[in-house]
Image 1: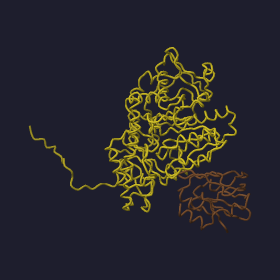
Image 2: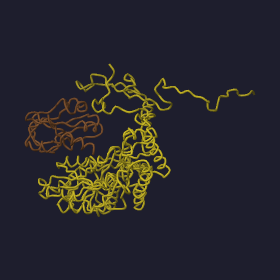
Image 3: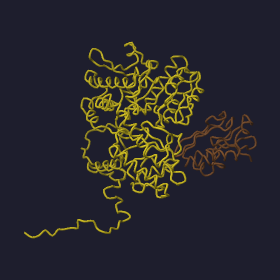
Image 4: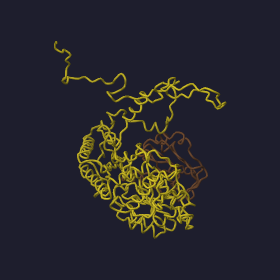
Length: 517
Length: 123
């Protein structure tokens, strides 16, 4: 037996010279992936199918030209989509501090529950006697939502926040029609800082939108609001906590003002995560509020899955709720699916049907899993921790960055670009520099009422260690900007792509792949 | 030729008895690269401060308000076809609409250039 002479250097080479580029365009294991259509596999097929036999009855409808779909094999297909997925940033890759989006952790328990065959493998058209568990789950989730919001009725079928807004505003419109006031009450009030969906929803329902100014603390100017009230006001749309991350302290007075004027109070529930288990919207005078199950109750979103936006309704609006809804009778559950069936049950559901089926079942399962695993006290603690985390970030970042408003915040903290004045660095550059540091940027340039806004929502999911790393990175960027580091202007430097030509993409969008000539 | 300005960053210039309306260079710079413009139709009438047109940049969508009351007599379709013109020459070639003023007093009530410049510096 001789000595093994296959030794190789196992220490770092003292001096290394890095190449400026690679032959393939790949950077180590970061693969430069082409579009699936660019793989030029049109003449190939990944699956062998038998030639059809017998008479082709398609006649003139038979395809005349090749279908031109890439025919990749299974390993090629797997690699393509796995490589694409590796370019994606998600809450499972790192903190996702998008303000107003509540990108909290999606517990794996939710996923396990949603994959139970009794929930995953059912069809909305199968006999109700065979899906009793699913109907019970919808009913139980509805009960939790009513309990948490202190409201008497809920519509489960809306499929996202904006869809929920539409449902709520349509209920308000229906109530006004019922009162014979639809023609006279045409104005909807919304703060200047509102989510864009608020005025869009109001306009979609045929209302005109009137902006409510904010006071110097970032909240609704109550006096200005009172002056805007009148017999033509249909509703007010308010987010609480608002999009500046602040609790509207005058919320009861705001509700009273709109009710005295004969209008309704629509609350945008996008920020319910900050107050769930702490405050019941029903106690604040809310008439309708959507709940983003995908924000508050941890179901995946932002490309990770469909949203779900159930809407809770007050006594005044409950008769205008849509169908379907679940009822329990003698230990059995059934769906009431039409207005007429609701009337036969002695209920008014004048809203009719809003979607084809019953809502986002998969999200219902995940949301109820979250509720049951956390319990009422856990949901309250999640809200408290979300607010604590945001205030910790606010307190640390204050050292270099300029908060838009004084005082504590709720679940998100808002900065303006005052601290960047004179540095040549703007909010957009700051956000791109965050990508270089491995962080998804916060919400930028929103709300519109704050110049160069940076809205950070850390959520309750992040540990103190993670928040500290995040704050250290942002403080470092802020200090570099103030020290005149012009490399920030061209960040990101280490991402697979640098600055994209957003103007070119908006002016000349290329939405379809076409083969090279 | 006298040009008057609004707090919402529109300019208006009298060309005979027709008012030419556009957005200011300050507004165009703040918006960034304009990618979309929506104009009212000819013959439409607007009250002063009513939203009349939409201008969209990569950053944001904004309403353009009627600086004075009146009827739209002409619209500049060239900026709809090529929104980049709004950034290139906001005060000249990239005018938005021409209006027949309903009340000449409204024009006189707007800011002159010195007042507008002071307004944007303080904003």
